[in-house]
Length: 298
Ligand code: FAD
Image 1 (spheres, protein in one colour):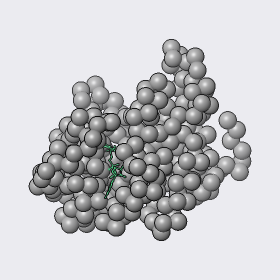
Image 2 (image 1 turned 90 degrees about the horizontal axis):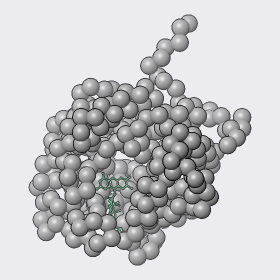
Image 3 (image 1 turned 120 degrees about the horizontal axis):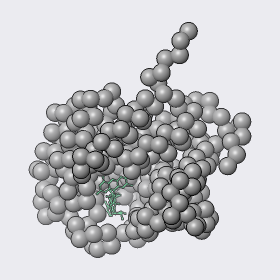
């Protein structure tokens, strides 16, 4: 990895961080340590995921509410259409409004029976993400982010059909799309060209996953339709039992990816943090972000 002087960033890059709601007190401590570490970088927002099938409804709400109460950060609550009536989903949205949350990441969600099975909308629920976006906008003046898939959602018959779905979400009021993670930046830029050619002009923010555990990430990528290039596998080859080296390689790989994105004109990046701060903090530092809480003496 070479950080050429031309790669020094002049205007600050906007970043956002994604977390998942903790299941245990230990995980909760890790999450809050990470939030505290990353907060001084002044992210645009921090988002908290919603477990498959709505399984983390209370925990997502509790985490997001605590972010509102205990930090200066702007939280975004993920919400899906899965396994709930419109009334139930609307109630969750209203409870976010009442808690002071003004940003929702609206998603369809995965089929209840798991990724790879057929998606069945709940009979009384929102059928598609675009309907959920419209429902959220009808409840309050929320900022709404949605997903986008540079390598196509696995269920979409074609990339064009997937872009139709993005278009429908934009038509219903989506303000921003955050992409599924990808490793080859050309996928992102080709997708961006196609989306812009369709007249979709909302920000399409690249979602970046620092690879802490290659095997796990590669497994997950297969399920979500993200390709894992051979060169990436080669970089982690032989490191299954070498956590320290893996971490250094992961930082280098992610730094290389985000610096290339920025060199090619990207100004907003969303990080899938996996509730860990160290790699993401280092990568943000390379992007020119500094601890805003540190005041340099005159
Ligand atoms: P959509 O983009 O709405 O589309 C899903 C599929 O349906 C596509 O094949 C699309 O082409 C098709 N489709 C959509 N609308 C239409 C339409 N109007 N007509 C015909 N076909 C249509 N999952 C969680 O459970 N919790 C989370 O917190 C979560 N956060 C995520 C955050 C990001 C940034 C991303 C990229 C994904 C996230 N997911 C989350 C995963 C997501 O729920 C799954 O990928 C799910 O399978 C699809 O949901 P979606 O909103 O991305 O789908």
